[in-house]
Amino acid sequence: MDDTKVPPRAQMATCPKCSHKFRFRVVDDLEPAPPQEHGASGPGPSGNGSPGPFGWGANPMGDQKASGPGAASAPGEGQADPMAAQRAAAAEAWKRLQGPKKDDGTAQADASAQSSASPAVPSADEPAPPQPGFGQPGSQTYESGETAGGGTNGAPTQPEPWAARQAANQAAQSNGSPVPFEDLPAHGFFPGLWGTIRMILTKPSEFFKRMPAHGGMGKPLAFHLLLAEFMVLCQYVWSMAGIGATAEYLGKPELMDMGLGVAGAAPIALFLIYPLLLVLRLMVMTGVIHLLLLTLKAGGAGAEATFRVLCYSAAPLLLGVIPGVGPLIGGVWSIGLTIIGLREAHRTRISSAMFAVLVPILLMLAAVIGLLQGMVHGGA
Image 1 (cartoon, rainbow, N blue to C red):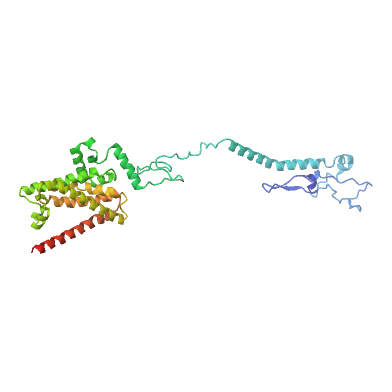
Image 2 (image 1 turned 60 degrees about the vertical axis):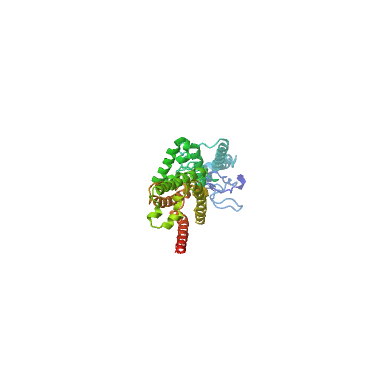
């Protein structure tokens, strides 16, 4: 700062950073009062505008160094350079005042230059950022065992349930199907058939949960036809032996004439026509049940999954080997397995699966009962 801008009697300055006031010069550094020319020794004020009793450089606190005997005995020394001490003190004060600010700015500039020149290195005390891993955002592995990529903001995106299920189906097909009957080269025909039946009858929830929702309809259809043909063949054998079908034990000969009366039909009709009727019945039941599931917003796995559940739910038809009540028990058991299979395959509520299965069955029973009543009244 220019010294001319500093008031001549200013003694205190304020730090611009901490607002602390300090004395940057004392009155001793000011210009001493000029000596009086005519030897006036009185301290009173002069008429020509001379300084008062303290003089120009007098200390108002009582310090009289500038006007003491030393100053009077050496007037020439005080007049040699009267502003030298003042300039030196002011320069030193402003140097102390401006020095830290300049140093701080330089340090900040150096620090910013260093940070831009070298990459940031975390200190030893800072914890390392978590790497993508098991259960971390951005990881492809979740605690449920399913895999999916992270979202656009780094958060994990939960995979679509049927996309994940389709990926699991493809993995199961590449490594061997969890259904033994669909992997006959590895299990063999009869071991694969029996292993599938045993899994369905003993652990239905686990079987249908592991069953691929997609993978073809041929093998499930073959499984269903084999068991249905086996049941009808057993009925045919018991009928030829004179034991009769279930309807005989119920005391309704009219029912035998309508077949359950398939057991009394010719063998050619048993092995050619009946499979075609089974396929047609499967297709119709699949369409009706899946339509009801879609109405309840519960058929997310697709119509193929519904078809596969209906096919594999025929495992209890193996009880057709028991004369009399075997087919009846097998049919009721098959309905229960269908409900469980739809719940597991479509990941839906048990109530939705029951509604989709029982409504068509009740409608068919009502139609059959009405038809039988019409036949009975017509015959009478």
